[in-house]
Image (cartoon, rainbow, N blue to C red; front, side, top):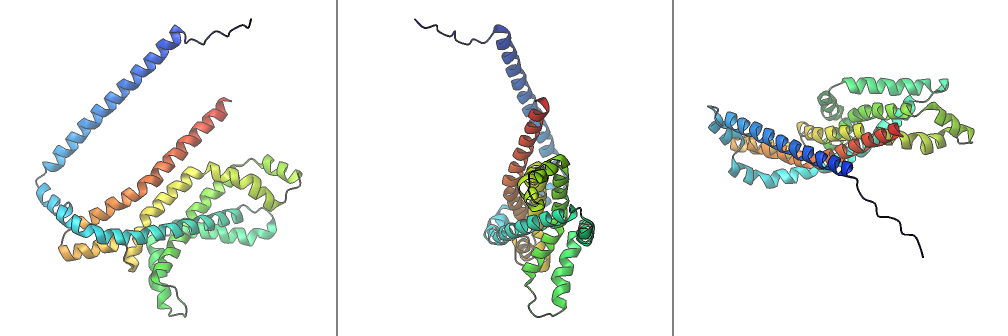
Length: 286
């Protein structure tokens, strides 16, 4: 004859707590939905009731112009997607390399540290638009043999500008790793390169993942500036369509497509940020 374990039963007090939390959640959802609906109605009434609403709707929200311009803008958007892919990889690699150079401690590496510091100071302070103009208009003006096309020069401008921002993010992550972990790794016989590869960088990248993704979202938005150098991307197509129709709706269409393209990356950023916050809370309560 074997003894049976009594089934677990939720206590009356715990059931009362769960019911209270459920009621609070439902109340919060109802209040949030009601306040959002009220704010939305007020915004719609204020905008559509403005004296110039009919003119603005015809100029910026013309459905017929939007339908006719959409295919060409989508073809231009593909160029933005390709540019974003290669520029993101280039900026991440450049930023990581510069961050490692800035964290080198031996005195013999001072020139490299000074060069990396000067680079981050320069390109974090200089507007992207000026860097873009200097590379896409200034470099071709030198008439050198083998000068890359404007699209490549514009991509380089994006990479070196965002590489400076990403370098500081990576550096913050590297320096957040406690020195005792480096000392422990070196005491186990690991070289500096092995310590960085197996101990420091994995932790650093995990800690700064949310700000890294935020910078990539900003890069996704700024790839549209390449249109100023001449390549036919989504913004450039919208500019041409606007000049032909005397209507700004193509710009709105391009803006909506950029937002739709950014939503997945923004969602991933929010998810990674929330996950990091939960991990830190769990570590703090342990």
